[in-house]
Structure formats: C-alpha cells, structure tokens
Image: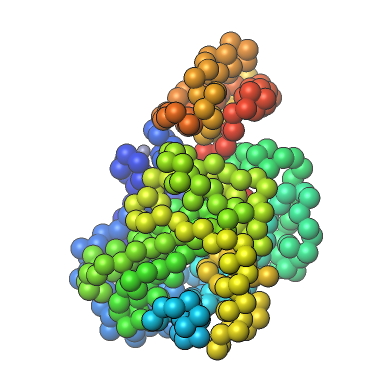
Length: 352
Length: 82
Ligand SMILES: [Zn+2]
C-alpha cells in the first residue's frame, strides 16, 4: 500500500486527533483513542471482488485495519467457519442461527489471535522490540506464540495466585512470565504503570487502539460469509464490552463503504447472571458499570468496570443468560449437528 | 524529587459521592491532583484524575481512598484480560 488508509487516532470522547503512536488515552479527558480511516479512499478501492481474491484470513480486509503497510504477524489468523446450526435453531425456536467458531483460529485456537496479530503487526511498524500483556489465559498464550513467530521479546504478567496450568502454553513459547502479588486492583494498577515505564508494546494498554480494531475482522467475516449481508440479530459475549462495540463498528463500516446494503440490525450483549455488571448497570439506570470481583458463573468473563456510553450506542441492552440456562444451551450446542465438545458458544466465552 | 504521575478513574458509590474525599486526600497527602472529568448521579460518582507526587505517597493516597470505600482503577480501567 502506498498511502495508508488508516489516518490517525481519535479520542472517542472529545474527537481530538493523535499521531499513530503507541498511545491509547486522550491527554485531556482520558477518553480512549480509536483508529480513524480515510473512508472515501477505501470506498474507491475496496470491492467485494478484491476481498474475495485475497487469502482467506482476517487480513483480506486490511484497508480497514490500523496498519500502514502489509501485515507481518499472524497472517493465517481469521476466516473461521460460520456454522449453520439447524438443530440449535429448532431448539431455540428461531428460523436460522449461525455460530462463529473462533476456537479454530491459528496459532493459539482463540479469538485473541485476531487482536494480538494486529497489535504486533503495528508494534513492528512502530519499531518496538518487546511486547507484553497482563492476562489470565488466552491472551497470554496468543501474545507468547505470535511474539515468538515475529521475533519479538515478550513478557506476560499474571496475578501470582493464578493456576500455573492456565499459562503453561505461554511458557512453551519462551515468553517471560511474571507473577504479581496483590489484590486485583493493585495488580491492575501496577500493570498500567509498568506499561508506561519500560517502553514496551503492551498489547491491551498502549497498543490498545490497534489491538481492539482486530475484533472488527470477526464482523467483516460474518457479513461476507452470510453473502454480504448484516445479520438481523448478533449475540455477542460482553466480556469487557469491546468486542460488541467493534462488531457494531464493522457493520457500519461495510455500510459506509458500500460493501453491504443498509439494513436494520441489532447487536445484543450477553452476560451470565453470576457476573453481569453491564446488565445490572442498565437495570439500575446508572452511568457506571460496577465490577463484580467474585463472579459466580461457569463462564469465564473477566470482571471489569467500564462506562456504559460506548455500549449504549449499540442498541438494545445486554440480555442475561442465567447460569442454568447457559448450561442448558451449552448442552444443546453439544447435541447439535456439528458441535464438537469443548467449543465456545459465544465468542470469547470459555466452554466447560 | 523523582515525580510519579498516575492517571486513574475513581468510582464512588452513593454515600461517598457527597463527601469531600478529594479535598481530604489533598490535605493528608503531598499529592497534586488534576481532575479531568467527572459525573455524579444519585447512585454513583466517577472521576478521571491525575495524581502526581512521590510514588510511595501517591500509593499511600490511593490506599487511603480505598480505605474510604473508593474504587481506584487505572486509566485503562482493566489491564488484565482472560
Ligand atoms: Zn479527548
């Protein structure tokens, strides 16, 4: 690519523009920075035919991802199957249902490979030599594996009391795993401090604007796989709320550049009842999503606080899936036609 | 003085959102606070603040806020993911 289509970073709260560096919050109001693009130019080059002529990976939509040149990390990531689940549709009483199976992403069999490959491709463009993350599982493994492949040094910070088995895979890739003692909030603050101190590319901190954009690729793929259409309803696991907002952004970008017809759609967020800070915030009408430090659920969403404004833009509110109902749905999933054991139901949600 | 700067979101619940906690913190600790934005309703308050001072003093101020029931998150809100 000659001129990058990715133009700048922009504060989601006040709209101020920032250079495309390893920065992630607005200096003025601490609003998150987000990648912005030259959509007019993208519209003039990116066609369905061009996309279809490319490799089946998330990078076939590269003009809408925040890198300047060609991708260099995780070239095989994405374009995971969109599985039509007829028996599940019957069990749930709906006409048609598809499940996006992101557990077959390479190299670490997790959704995180999407976001990490964008973050590390950008880290290389920025000339960073060391990358890091704070994680309790899948993210650690993805950073470790992709960094090893890219020839970058990596560090993984984990709460010291985490079960070792959760990061065993990361150790295999030769990353440096550092356990941090302390209560969750202390560990969380320390990770933020470390990210600022050593000049590392911390994928979900100072590389966050790039990292987060990787989630859009899932939305792009869903539309293409449905025959260039936006699904009427999309149910997304909330986790931190970021995937939901990026799927929403992906749908809007495809409409904006004319790759899909404009249609009515809704993106729903799902949270297990035992850990549903966002759903609770909505019910109580507050402006703040309170974290739930001790989630009581079989799913494994990380409790986090976030302000709800971004999520509110995505339309109807998160539906809670009661723990029992979730187990039942998992059972139906396992019983449905093509659903192997130990797969996830919604993106980013762990299976039992 | 090796100055340390930390950027945080402070989360107050209803009873605390009416108390002058930031003022009290400033009296007790040698920290400069710079409020960037804040919202308050009947149930909760949220404030974006930069704290500057000796690292240990800033940590002490945060520990004091926590002892008063304030949740102190880094500017990224959550840096630890699954
Ligand atoms: Zn701003």
